[in-house]
Image (tube, rainbow, N blue to C red; front, side):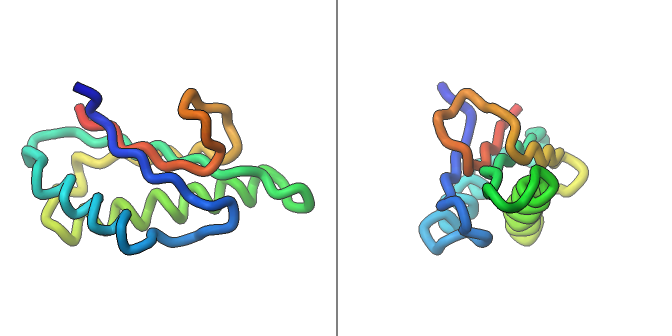
Length: 102
């Protein structure tokens, strides 16, 4: 079973839409509190803004998901955040957040 939640963003989208908020809440409800989560966040590089902008966008998206998990009583100590900016991933999307469940 694929133990990942994928949230796909539009390139300039900063915040989760309502459907994705529901997905994150459903994920939290189905998790064991001992699970370890790794949030890997990617963002596309805008042509006139550099890779630091992509990293900031990816961090902002990851932290929003982290906050939602914590609000729904998932322990913060079990959440790791990797804001990877414009780095390559194997998902086929440049703007994506992947929550890996371990």
